[in-house]
Amino acid sequence: MAERGRPRAFDRQAALRGAMELFWEYGYEGTSIKDLTHVMGINPPSLYAAFESKEVLFREAIALYASTDGAVTDRALREEPTARGAIEAMLRGNAGLYARPGRSGGCMFVLAATNCNARSEEIREFLAAERRKTVMAVEDRLERAISEGELPPGTDTAGVAGFYGGVLHGISIEARDGVPRARLESIVDSAMAAWSVLTGTRQLAGGGA
Image (cartoon, rainbow, N blue to C red):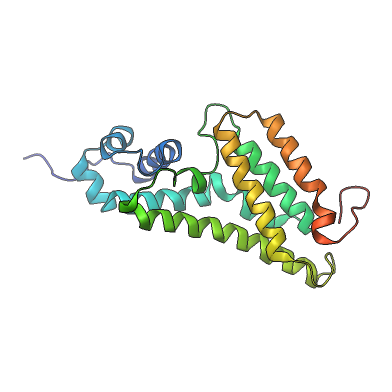
């Protein structure tokens, strides 16, 4: 008798990667179970056996994105020695990711939420929370810069973080609209030109704060 459920050849991680790419391209609402089973190479019962539901699958796909393609921001904030360098690396790194030829453009946290209806309110809130985490991570990096003497006490870290978070999310939309990478880079140039005004510092030669 044929074995029921997932086939022996099922590669869960590869299937999850396929689902991530699909959600990234078409969003949560725009991706159907039929689309998912086709790209994952499994049937609906196997999908539910492995991931329980479309929502659980989506949340796992978001986690995969955050740890792979979407890790640019965390890496920049963690590894760059200055807050200014971290934010610039975050913006430029993501601009490069969003504009890669042959790949889904923009940020999955931003674009997968488009057109969510009332039935998907939990997904919309989940993605909004993920975007807020990004802005909060930027704010934390700016607070650290104050403690290290890079930024003056009293810097409006929430305002500055909100500004650069807005630039990051705007770049995502622009990339999905087909704006070329050179144009995205010019947006980053303009955003970084505002650094000294936003933080009350004077930009020194060589790009430091």
